[in-house]
Image (cartoon, rainbow, N blue to C red; front, side, top):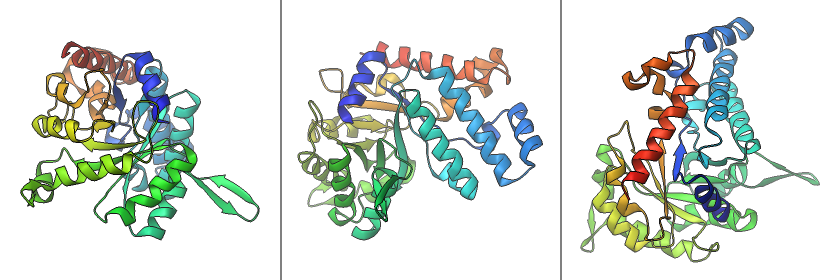
Length: 305
């Protein structure tokens, strides 16, 4: 799958991923109203509104972008109806030829991690038949439990030719409470990065490993170090836009070949119509505002090189 992602990045010339992390407050009133007329102000109505919102954004941007990244918590808050919207979003994006990175941040003991890996990346056995669950192309993984928690995901990725992005240095302000702690004269995130590179050696594509890393745009100097530690790992870079990252901050996340990183923007794109610079589109044309935000993000990143 890493080969397909790189192919899509080269084709679009857009090393970006749109984070489909919808809150109901992002969903325009006309979409909410229509969903509630059909299903009532219920969890089912909320799920329908989110699904229609996502669908419109995918339709407006699918020719520009290589990937989307739905954050599962934004769907889980609406229970089974939210998960249904998540599932429909994944399937629709893949029908449109877009790579799907499931932002699930799972990580547990071996058997539990295996269940997560099967549910999101693999196939579950039911009698004599096998079925896919959510069927994303990549997922994010929390490595806090060490190899026991990561290996089941790696095993499924090998079997299914899918991929992982493992949390190494996250974009949130308090990430340093643990990730920056000095262990044997080096910050913990460097040790995690080395482990990601080691795991990645087992799962190589043509140019890069199936096993990538998450490194926040808000820490460019740390990204520079981690780029050297993980030369064959693709880096998923959150923190662009709303969290403060800009194109000029991202140069060191990429390799000299212009590859090696994919940058995420969530509310900066999906809620673009709420921003002053895109106000001319209006709420009705929210998806057109999202498309323009994608074009502006591509220009910002490519201009930095």
